[in-house]
Image: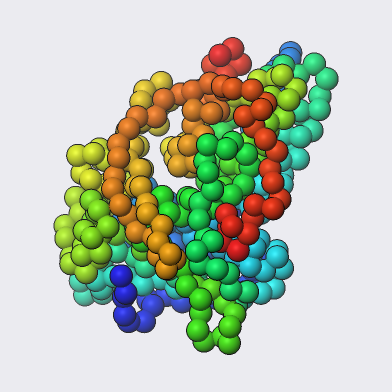
Length: 115
Length: 254
């Protein structure tokens, strides 16, 4: 558990964008992540969005909803969305929601950039 | 299951989402201190978070200044300073109360998870991670107010009846305070058991299947085990409909 704060960093590598939220994703902080995702998904030439979850220690259903929304947008735009390096607690909630096999989930960002 | 006696901790907060992280911390650390395994502490914090979110969103319409009460009761007793190191607590009962409008208890249910769309997961998550979930109308507020009572047992149940029985009978818990993982199928553990955070491997887990009753009480039915594997996006946009704003009343318990 942590303070409940959330910071989101982003970077672009060619046609891949990497979003790195750090902190807790809950109903209070979820709009920060949602806004960052929406902004990136409007970028021209984006083929792949990697969300690096290594720095996320907690996520509730608000965060899950944000990721599902991002997935829907990615599908509409025919781009890829990959979740990288979720901590066990975050992976658990994806499993509970039965979304762990709906999303592409990989062990690290490097794999996410090519997998 | 009815558990008499006063709460060990009773907290009132305003319905402001800023306070969620503090409540999560409280639940997590109290659960840890009374002997729950780390992953179960996290699950109870998650369930509490989801329950309070539902009150704020659907009970109070996101108003940030309404009261919510959180009560924690250590089932089976709790260690005192003189008995430090013992773990008499067999379960943790978490009660969330509000003074929002009352809803039809039979309408409080999880949505169809086969539909991949945002939202509507709170009730499902609560049912999955807790051993008993009971919604009630409060009778002390003149026709308003809801009460959600959730119980997590330290001793893993293997079924609804066993779950009720074990809540009243202290049993040893090999995984307490270990912070480690055990195999869910071997231990009959409640909640999700994760053996390895590495996604290249299968992650052992167990999911509690629940049965919903008309009374609003939900108890564990059976435990199934399986492996979680990395997956890829499948299907088309047709499988991913946009969210339906009309869904919330039923799926969020409001």
